Image: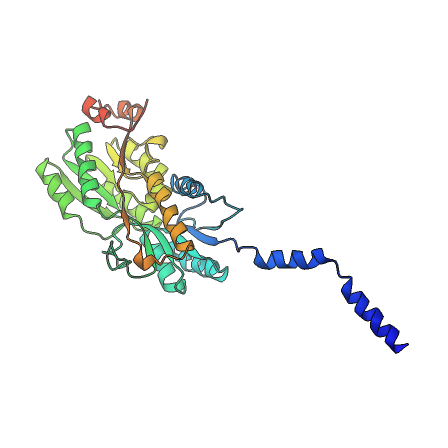
Length: 326
């Protein structure tokens, strides 16, 4: 009797379906889908060309969101104080890397991310202490840099002067403490006094616009900034209400009624970020991946706004425009 029980037990083990083992083996060997964390300072939908550009870059590298790459999105609704919590949440999800836009969010990832690599779009990463050099970042941050801000800013000021030759005093709206002596000198050379107004947060922006309104300026120049992108309709309404010829750095401004945009192509820069993500996921170290420089700068002109402001945009300016809104 005991012998028969033993044989029955052996037989019961032997009849386990072979597909069960094959299924378990397939699950064990299935490659893990990489997960990245994306942090944007504004509400969902205010990041303009950034995510479309990044998704275009991913597609060119054969990544399909939800199939072979996962993206966890965090939108801060304009509150930089929430950056630390967003980093903590994404780190707890064990993301392979952060995709961070702007120096403040990058720094939050550096201090709270536990060494997770960061692919960034940031102005002057060396000057802001995010990297040792553009060629050899030397840390956990790499990506695309807006380091050549001086050249872009001075050209924007020249375009504004060419479009509105009677302006003599221009308010410069910026979101960082980075000095820009070259821009001020360029202004002097073309007969423009540049008065600077810092707005590094949404509350500061409101105060800065009030200050601009009382400064007796003849024009406005707003540099590219996530903060300004979020509140672009308010800035445009302010400039147009005060009849200030204005040039902006974020590409969405002319679509919403801004006079002119001259600045880096955020679509193209974000497309390039995908290649950094790809290389890091394949084992490259951010410390060894040189920052790329923004290479494409586009001019956009809204002729409807120009007419409302009583301006005639010179043909030489229009010839340089990548887009003209009628």
